[in-house]
Length: 284
Length: 258
Image (cartoon, rainbow over all chains, first blue to last red; front, side, top):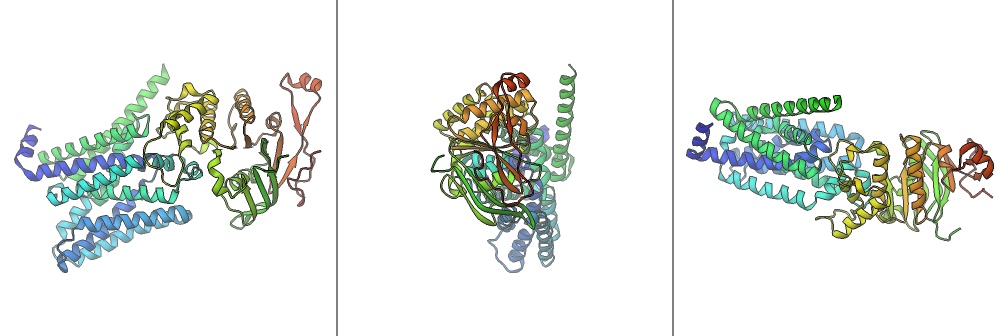
């Protein structure tokens, strides 16, 4: 552990990785709480995979066509937001087809991403990064972008906490209070989309869903109110990402996969602990 | 009878896809009424309530709520869904639930105001549930949950309460408490409920709409006091005269009670 602390002091790339991980964890804990309580983890999974299409396209334009200002993360943001709007509209106006559309976006995004990447020379290392994450690649410009995304996401939640809570808890009642459910759902899914983008470097598009859901579900065991769950989940996610980075650095393992397994370990432990606690209390 | 009905349905047809749910419905709820919508499962009780709220649009006919379209006037309605529709594992305190009744507008932002908190506290007090305010909603009993959801509806400061199965899955003593509460609220506002239980409902309400694709109104007849007391105790009993033909097309909610 002290070896890791020394390495963080010595190496800028580790400090960047740490900061990027914590930024992503905070957004993920807060927005993930809505995702888990509203039970839309499948939508989050779909958004995450769809993002590969945008990243591939941006990477291709940048490498093959010399659009040097365009970063893969830009492509990810645009795709995630477009997919969020599509799902929100289908969800509120064409509910019976929601499932199909979510699955289709998932696969089509992946397919488009793979095709773009295959058209780009030297793609292989980058494809692995997008799929499974690689915090070591985060540079200062990425950090700046991540910070902006965090401010947007946290600001959005802070400002619209009550209507977002209302559509998650009881959508029909919210509608009867005049809340524009389509608009609020679009907002929620856009915040989810941006959060997913922040997580790409940490765990990659394939494993995003685990980091959005596992720490939140563990936090849910202890929280009585939604905002408490958000704070707990954000803190737990941050601890998990930092631990994941430390373990993977010491043992020379991939960060994303390490973090996910740690998160799963915490989730299972908390759930079993809670079940045992309930049984003991019931037995008394 | 008031000149400004709270709800009117005129020649309303409603289908789910090709399946007719309600046919040729005419009914009126007047100011101060306590209406119970009864009928068999799948007969269209909840659909009728949803039409009144504007949550469903009729394929034919017209629905008016508080003198205008339901979409415009629904902010003046306090609605309570069936409590089983609500996710009990959701981390919410009673206060959080009741404050939802203070939302208004397409995308309201920022924290609740002090006046919203006062209104929520008043609504909880009116439902004898103020001491529950900091409890997690999930930890409440069925009867307590109903009180809290009624308080949320009251927090809207409504002109009319519309409640879907307010006594579903409650034991009889708790059902009586909920009805007593609704009866008290009915002194200041119109109340419309959906209920599956004719015998319980008829003690409390002044009008009964029976829904089975068609809607017809029943009379609520008082049984002479002494007989009622003899058989049912001091609370008494009122019967619903159930003498119409459910298969007949032309009986609507016209006021055929003398």
